[in-house]
Structures are given as structure tokens and as C-alpha cells.
Image 1 (cartoon, helix red, strand yellow):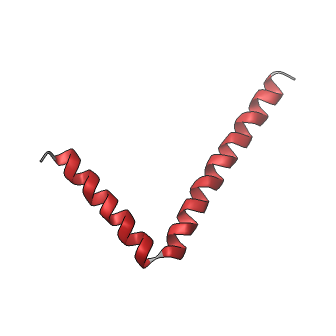
Image 2: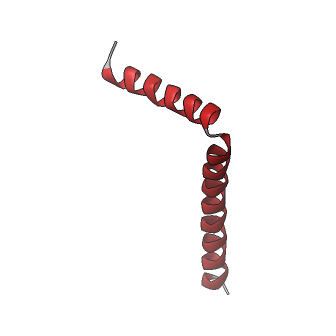
Length: 53
């Protein structure tokens, strides 16, 4: 087994462990990630709006 595959399995196992032991923390992390993506998309839209205005 190569190292990349082992690290992938370890990361997946950690995510599953985190979901079962800290569901509120996991939900907060996902919510935070989606908020960051939304804020980035808003900033990009505002940039293009100002660029073409």
C-alpha cells in the first residue's frame, strides 16, 4: 500500500470519528466553510459589478 492511500484512509477515519464524537463541532466547521465560500462569491460578484459599472 502506498503512503498516499494510507493517509487518505487515515483522514477519512478521522472525519468519521470527529462526526460521531463532536457532531456540533463538525456542523459548525461545515457551516463556517460554506459561509467562507459564500462571502468569497459575494466579494467576487461585487468586484465584477464595480469593474463593469
